[in-house]
Length: 480
Image (cartoon, rainbow, N blue to C red; front, side, top):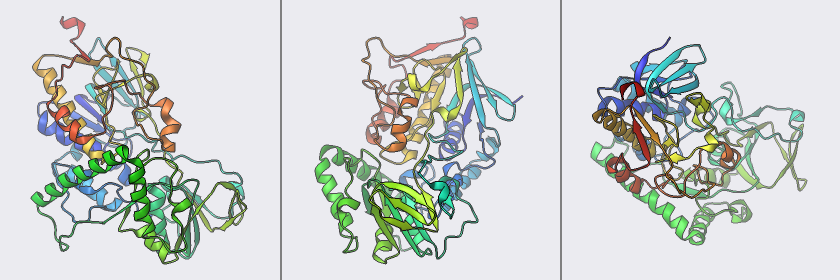
């Protein structure tokens, strides 16, 4: 049998460590534990080991606000981020609160007991008053695989980036990378440094933006004040870029295409290779730090091909137009498999919770589900900006409940709220579309609708009313 704590956090990645810090500092009277399914902390930044893995958000905003990122390198490697997350956990003694190798499988709420009972795959059970899921939104066991015709005929290895073999040697090899998202854009220049040639094959292109790799500090560590100023600047700049993209999509599309065209080799046209079919920010922008993808193309070490794949064959990939691309190695950067609530089977008083049937309250809690929050980051900004707001709101809620002797908080849809059919993540990306029916939905208006605007969310989450008329508060019946 496991422990009884006030708050149980599931997941020891970027969000889980943030949650631990906020619980320690803002709810010091509350006990907590973090359950981590793997044997190590770090989440995404430990799982992904493919060449060149890096952040697709600047580290000044992806880093923790309570421990500012002070390295001038704003787009950091996965190894650097992992070290930063683990050092943070050690510095604040959050590591001591982590129980590794505890993959949570079920979570059952009892109104009679005003608490959750959580079971893990190794047979342990934990109980808590509040459950905070920092599990992310993708399946850790494997990414999304496309069943390409003829893949069994290919003579070489086929690798998905989420399951990168440590011993894989691609030096001097011809590589085909299938995909056009952030992972593919990262892999191509990283592999091109030693491969004979890398070809990125895309069914349709993505919007890309080339940004400097860091802020000029003469190689020195930034002061805390400078780091916070850069963080504020980047928050505002990202928000303005997103708002401009939504208000003037044609202008922004033209700007992004022009920026790319100036960095391409003369023989590579923007259309069709860098002219997406969608509007800017219908999908996340792909960041190209220092223009490394375009530099690899100009050097002749990488190229891009746009078209439908017909089949794999023994020596490579054949496109629908008959073009054959020779390959010794194929990388299927075809995306993530999204899941809700960490694939945990959740029930309330014996009634199974169906994630696709519930609505999201304040981007973190759910209609009809008591004392539970799920951490999901922004679709248009750094994950941690939203994760930290959510953790601090959870602490505010816990403190409010203690002050008012409340044991149960249940978000409840108000009567007459119009029905809308829109998933939590309003993106047209393939990984979102595939999982749309499985994800919690949004409501027609706030607080049941996500803003995806940190500058508006910050005062609302930090200062807004807890008792806003959209939640029901209660105690156990035995105490009434």
